[in-house]
Length: 303
Image 1 (cartoon, rainbow, N blue to C red):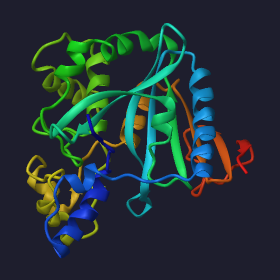
Image 2: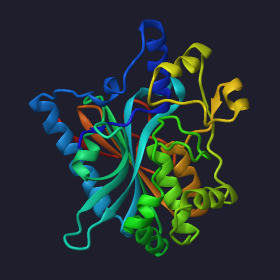
Image 3: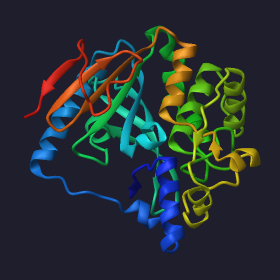
Image 4: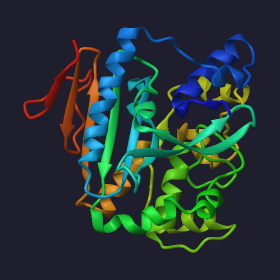
């Protein structure tokens, strides 16, 4: 199965504008993106992934939120585009990341487990990358782990259609971060399985309350160019949001905000690299742009 690497909503809207200027785009333009790494780049990314594994291994519980950066979306105030739930194996204490991906050959979203190294190396820029891990209090993990490893509930929370900029409270589409937060809602609400689980999980999230900060699209040209991109949709968003170009979309940052509000004892660690060094930064304040270490950050030299 060919799995499409996630593109952040804002990035797809940028691509939509390009499509509007130069002709329509097919979904294969997004599915077939790949990059060739040099041996040096691959070695540094593997060493970066090893530090990520160390930080996961230090997690007291057996489930954590893990997020990954993609292309540079700083102009939109977005560092992280793709979130997953990392879970510790019972057998060998290794970790995997369970996440939603778009299956290109099937034209639909699927759930996919990926090793820590593969997840950490899945960034678009081999010279600069960020990983965020949110460690949950161990006593809060069991219901989340049960939901995450329950095949029936996992599938009932999966929508049939994908949209990179899916409305956070829509049932028509879903993006990767939306699947994660709906699973959090189903687990924390201890919701029983059923075909309407997504609807009930969203109702629980509304009452939490879960209110993602809207993504502001800076240009109507970008907004309405989305009609040329098959993996971006506006039909599920409230008309007021479309008119004001402020789309309420689930992103890793909105998931972290929800977790911090509901479980204030949670801990966050950010691991980044700039091709020369890895920085391990603990706390809810983000590491400095460009992966610049602070006074209390741990640094692992790559050169």
